[in-house]
Length: 355
Length: 249
Image 1 (tube, rainbow over the protein chains, first blue to last red):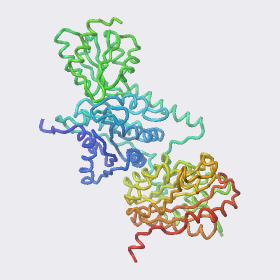
Image 2 (image 1 turned 30 degrees about the vertical axis):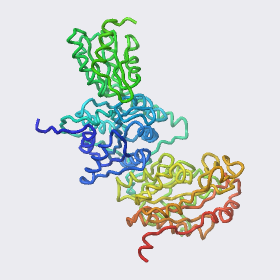
Image 3 (image 1 turned 90 degrees about the vertical axis):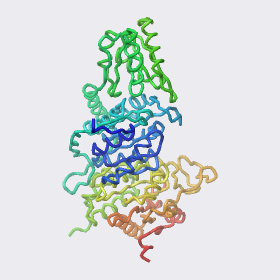
């Protein structure tokens, strides 16, 4: 595989963004995503792009808002505390129907938390990115290759649906190195007639705006946006199934947790336990269908998370609460070991779905 | 013979401003400058949050509505993506001097090549007359009902004086629009702030001392007098920085 290069996950995101046509990056230093900014600072000036270190995460996301208004591909990246600061901007991007790519290389929280990996921004990313009714496309890579792939995909989806794509990674994904292939056939950007690029005195002025003082108009804009979301829910869910054909125990895990879980599944299979995994690649839209299908055979769902149990709620909803649910988790920057996951599998197997 | 015309850069949308408010005058001055410089087709304006939040409906050029205080950051993004276009922000005192202070100072520090029109009327108008960062000592507002007590909530922020210490800023001038002479000067300053951008000189801010009769509790005429009596003594008019002129000396 001559076309493969060894890269950190953070660097893979940065290079993939450039390949996807992103020429504007704004960010504020925060661990553990700093390599993205460092990479952009080196590369952007060489290719006629713009890297700018903003005075804050708030400013960075608003610079993103400005570039996106002009129709160009643009991104910012941060880690958990910084994403909280960006949430105002995320809401405005949604309200103005502007595309953008935002990367969250998660660390432990709440507050200043720590700098070790975490998945505890799941709720924030999938349900509460900011004030108001809105969604973001949330993409959860589980390898350096996917860090790059989902970055390209994220830009394409953001433009297609005029909304924010968020890469929800974690400190491990950002820091680890793996071989990665960066061969992409990037789709052409859709025409952006709404962009504020100057009227050239040839058209009516365009307005990028999220203010609707008439309640009926605001209601209409929300309903129209949610019709788009409904279409996305039906068409854009991505997931990977692993040994699910005969699974009586189904593990739900994304990102780094799914890699740990895979090891545990291999061990459990050696012991004859029928266990498999559904790994959501899109956290929103959540892949409800495979989980519902799995619930026909599986008696127990084990959600392996680096949080106090956030995705497990979506697993319950997807399976209409008809199974038994177990949380296997570590938090604060700790990662569950394959042994811990194996123990959860063995216990679930012994209980056989009994409450 | 046409004696008086609406500038092309203004739309026909009726403005929502209160009687006696000077936003209309400043909008017109900005629009006249855009017309005179022939830049409407390549200008992108950024509206703030505050009374002039709906400025996007009043200017004929492309417009973006920013979140509260973030207009200079949004303008930075636009200008970096479209360096050949003309980008201006239009912001009030709460927007620019309170919640958006960081964005203001850092846009100036970077010498971001944008034009900033800063309306200082010493009050939050849109939300009904609360104390602004620029409210005068002793000024009675909804949130300083006994008068602004500087021991309790500090002193007004003087933006032009403050930014004059920022190396990056190109041009800073404070003007007023309470009489014909001042309006003429204000237009000159606004024009220069746009010309600076066209000539690549960088961050140019015009602070416009404005009136808010509704929330000051004064008649429009009295409000204009209050500018002379109270505002201008605290906020002296004039050029606070003009780097190119100084370098030419």
